Structure formats: C-alpha cells, structure tokens
Image (tube, rainbow over all chains, first blue to last red; front, side, top):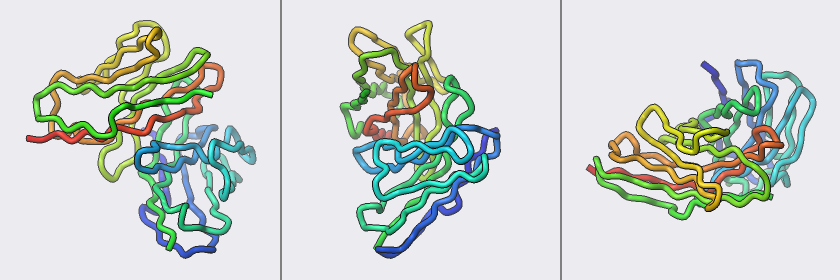
Length: 112
Length: 114
C-alpha cells in the first residue's frame, strides 16, 4: 500500500522564520504535490513536481518554494513565515494520470 | 480555468437517513471527476472517480455519484448513512489533457447524528 509520510503532524513557528515541511513517499511515484487546506476553500495547489529537480508553480505559490533532490522526497519551504501561512498542509503523490493521488496525514502549521 | 463548487458547506443528517452532497464544475474541456473523503485528523482518501464509460460510479462503502455532463454536476449520494460516515467530503476535477492536477471544491462537512 502506498504510504505518504509528512514529517510533522503539528508545528509552531514564529513570524520571519524559515520553515521546512518534509514529505516522503515509498512507491517510486514521479509526481508529487503540496496543497494547503483552509476552511471553506478546500485544497489549493501550492507547487508540484513531475520529476527530480523539476518543479512547477500551482495556484498559490507566493511565499513558498520547493525542493526535490530525490524522487521520494518533496520539501516545501516557507522562506519567511507569516501569520497568513497558518494552515493545514497536505502532500500527495501519484504514478500515472488515471490513478488517484495518495495523501499524507497533513501538517498543521501555526505561525505566531 | 476550471472551477468546482460544493453548494453545501455543512450537512447534518440522522443515522440511516439518505444524504446527497452537491458538486458542480465549470470547464470548457473534458474532465475527470473525483470525490475524496477526509476523516478527522487524517489526509484525504479517494472515495470514487469518473474517468469514462458509465456515468454512475459506486464506492465499496455504499456511496455513488452520477456524472451529468449537461448540468456539469457530479453529486454524491448514499441511501443510508452510518455514524462512521462523519467526515469532510471534497469534490475535485482534473482536465483530461493535464494529467492529474486536481482542482478542489470547498468541501462539505457531513455530521451524522444518532
């Protein structure tokens, strides 16, 4: 069974800090995604990656960057955290377009 | 660009009663359609999907959804809900030409009452 693991379930950081959210998948999927989930807004795509060292902006990339040095790991970086980045962050991966995305359990990030 | 609207943000329902969650989408090209479920403190899990073929799709736990192209809808139904169906449900679409890049609706929170 596919497993997508996010390194932290809960995280509290301060305004201005550089924050790293890590995601690892164990099924050799090429495609990985980072979303943020906010009440009433559903999930919004921040960044995605179709291959190692490849990244593309999603719908709300401002204030974020990503890194994909290895196929199984996709990191989301908040360069200088702000309070409006307090949210639930979800990572997902999939192998081909006709298969569903597999999600991690999420990281609930609070920026104080 | 495509968009997804879930008309109800919350749906309270009694156990063993039927439930319908509404989803409408807008897109000028062909799409794939999905329903995902998120149980408390968990990530999303695929509930069912429409890719092609029969417009009525079913899940293993009694949910079904019907793709209506003329009304651009993909409503989710269950004839008799259980307490364990308490969760948030998300409708999502992806363009057939764009792989599996999903656009999600705002979610519908279902609360099943005994």
